Length: 391
Image (cartoon, rainbow, N blue to C red):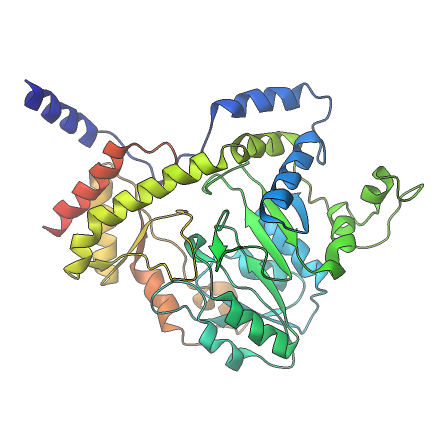
């Protein structure tokens, strides 16, 4: 009898659709959203905005935190803060989301694309120095899948050449590099709280200001080019237009949604790491047979379980695996397309580089379903289906 129930349950599970992502929504989310709705203030920089910013400053000892409407906005603020202008060059990995480059091209910079490492999709630090010219203004390391770039080596190169470091930490909430929080290492750091991230505001982001030279101006740019924040703190008796800027503040509804998850951050992280480890343990036998490669976590980095991916042996195998999973009601997806091969790069004559590792991840990387509410049986269903494909 027990066996029959078990088999029936398994059959039913196999018919259950498993999406690639489900945004994390907790019981506190509704409570805090209702509180924000009745607070009398829905625009930015209210109670929940301040609570979120204080949370990050206290937990990770970030000197200055400003919530933004997206990770893209945080990157655009960074580009404004370091004074990017026409003719400047910015080094960006080719294997990344377009925002990592777009924020700087909007200010007139030329993007110089860097290749990935052969064992992680992160920027290959060993190749950075040869890309530096007298026009280089900044390096933008992207911590792919929340796994830190080798920042000591990168920062040493940047300091030697007088170049700013802007961490694209969109995927790296609660990640660490040699015991230090990711996002605390560069001059500036940018996070995302899109609904695909470990914690979400629906849409949202955050700028971390580590370089003290940028703290005062960051608030001005954040507040539409005015010194409004200083006025509200009583530091000036009136405020006005003093610099460039834009409306980068998220609404209190976004901030309330984010805060409802921040207070459960460790619970969310613990569950995601459990899921990640189940994937790893369930698939390592196939990896040992050479069917694909599993994620590699360098000894200097922690794993925040932002995603679980496989690197297949060929593009054909990757595409066939995705199709097989889809036929079995499992939605796995590929990831970035190399930016140096994009139409934009071609139009702007920035696609003349040969970056084999970036292209390898473009062709072969597949991301498996990963979200906080994913059940153990759903994880096992994905693992079993992958095993059946490789049989």
